[in-house]
Image (cartoon, rainbow, N blue to C red; front, top):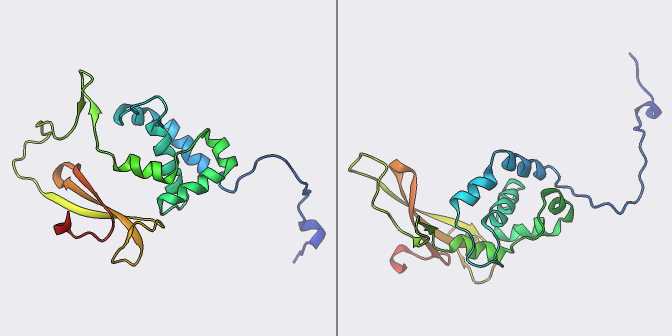
Length: 190
């Protein structure tokens, strides 16, 4: 049986200080690249409303970093700071600026609306139903958004969280309403 010596196993590289920007999260850039190739940016532009002012973040500036944060193991909105502080990842992904956790939270909580054909803001159901069924199931479910913010209440899970109460029409896989709550708010308190 042949056993190589220690010198034969040693890799031929040298360590040296560098001024290059490096990141331990370079793999997340692959998710960004895949999203761009699949046309996610175009889909965001077509399906999410543009900001009201020229100074606001564009929807893709919220969605793409948020998706990377979740792919990287983020569990709370504050975890966006991990991407914000990682200059190497921001350079790889082309993020010139990032919204903070508060800005993302406000963006997620704002009422859903989209411009109609005349440029007016339309919101709520249009009356057109993409189904021939007459009976539907309304599925109401609370979704916890864990946070470290002191203004959030403790939940029954033992963590501070905000709560979004989502209402879906199950047969259409369609979210028809959202009610944002502070934490352990009971339905009767809405």
